Image (cartoon, rainbow, N blue to C red; front, side, top):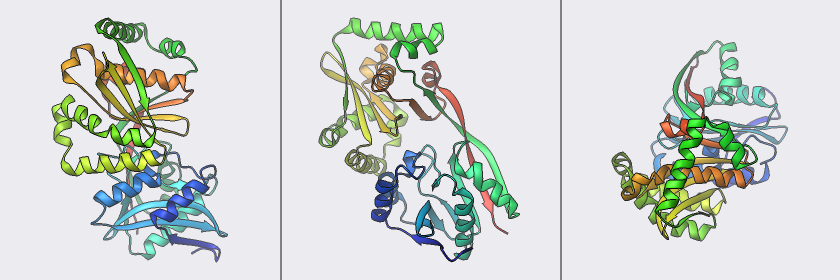
Length: 329
């Protein structure tokens, strides 16, 4: 350690959760995929072949940053996987980034780590903003490359304000599809947010997810389904999870699974009844999720990773996602 009052300790998930609940206003918990409920579920379902490293950096006894990592041999990577976690990062108190990364690198080297494999990363991640420069100053080998895109948009205060951000063609398409669905019967969209109701809605969501597309049915292995069920239970209990359910004539025809956190909405997944594909119920469920987010006063709507066409048609703006590898001398 560089100073006697600088320490790195390894936390349990219980102690990490306590840190989260006590320091929300101090630390940059701005990535839902590194919140303790998410990390713990992923680790229990997929992390058994790695060593857990929940490294907490304290400066003068006060927490300054958290490193949610997996150690495999001489390599460290984030807890999570690119197929289930859209982007990842460290959790750091603003202004403590340089101290945090210098102490973290020293500690990892002392544990025999020789390589960091960090992905996916937003451009404003602490890795790209701070760690890359610190590593280069230490003469480490650093490589960075674009790997994917994510789409998001800033939400205006009104629904009409949102519609006005779209092109005339996009706006016409949204209104036409909403009108066409309304002509087909009684339309209702409602949000499920209490814990018990979320758990009760899980079977319906998985059915619609599986039926909506063949690739989703293939993706939903027993292991992935177990992960989804555990994730719903943990994030519902933490107040993060929402289901948006679109009904036609009192029958559910589409659902969105999303997270409501830090005044932002994160659209994680969706499913729909293929018998109603001709009415674009999958797209409309996302449109109504957007509308509800505006009406609740949320400031950002994050479509998350992937360049699906509907995200652009609904006004999403691209954010490049990167992978970064750092090799120690």
